[in-house]
Length: 270
Image (cartoon, rainbow, N blue to C red; front, side, top):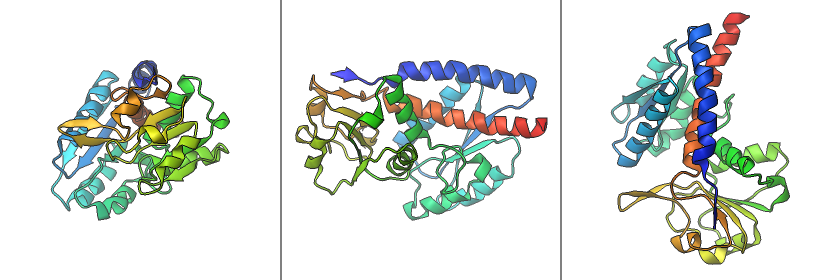
């Protein structure tokens, strides 16, 4: 088995970002700040937010966590939209009332939508960007592969499909209720459903490449979509349980925060 490890690649990105942030602070007196809004009490969410805080501290980007009561997130986002010292805002998903997800994401100011999840966002969504960085970093030419995406969620599947279409890459789309045995016809599988063990051996052809971007909590651990028996195979290339897409997703998010600050600096210069 060959692993697609995103930790090392994320390290290179982080070095570049640290230099950019120093320049923003020194040349433009811009102190980059990301605000995270959450209205749920969930240990998995707490882990993700802590990772973002630690990453931000490493490159001198301030990360604020705003914990709100269910139903009060809109009020918090409105306040953050009006703050000049906050250049990026994300809504940490899932929210307590999933029916409000779309409306909450759309309520983030366009120029601060660093998760890239608004319909008209100027930013690339973080996880799809991370997946493309990861594949490129390992020299995998997606255009030469037969590609499938499992799950068309707002965070991963849908924006990844759009990004690949812009590059003239047509990916087959599967939902978790489809006949996933058909996946064994594909060279590259990206899965992001949050269903532990969904992808089994019979769905994976010899020599396949698998990017597991699914996340779920099982027995207190964060797990992906791919069954453990698949991970034991020696003939495939796959992201590890930890250190695959995740580190690059965080890096891609902070790239968007930096880009939001650079737009402010360019506007001031002009």
